[in-house]
Length: 175
Image (cartoon, rainbow, N blue to C red; front, side):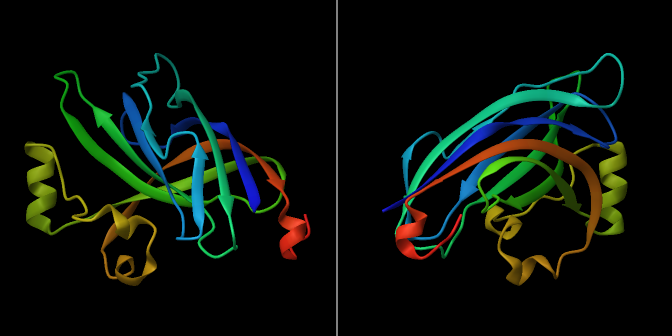
């Protein structure tokens, strides 16, 4: 069987309205993929930078997959959250990015967005906090219903991934 190693880190995030951010992440694959080692999902620590607007996490990612086919290539989905001084958490953005299919080291930027909601939701968010969230996180990486949402662009998450492919040539894939 062909093998895929994903080794890297979620470096950090920039361009969000406030600092004190953390990131929840996960990997979505098709049915032909099997995780041999590593964690399918995780969460970074909260970073509150003293200078600048870049929140640094340097959160490691180390995954080892095996597959019988290319369909359902892994996607990394992200949720960026803000934690205020009272410990309350507010969603700041969703995003996803395809794991590169070429071997080597890749520096990636994942743009994020969040649901906009009605004008009542926006007014409530200004005074009370919170805001609209997706009922199903599957909408982050499945395109069917995501394009019906009213969204606003948020910041960018920076990642560094090293991709190692093994035995893909046996399945007609040249690397």
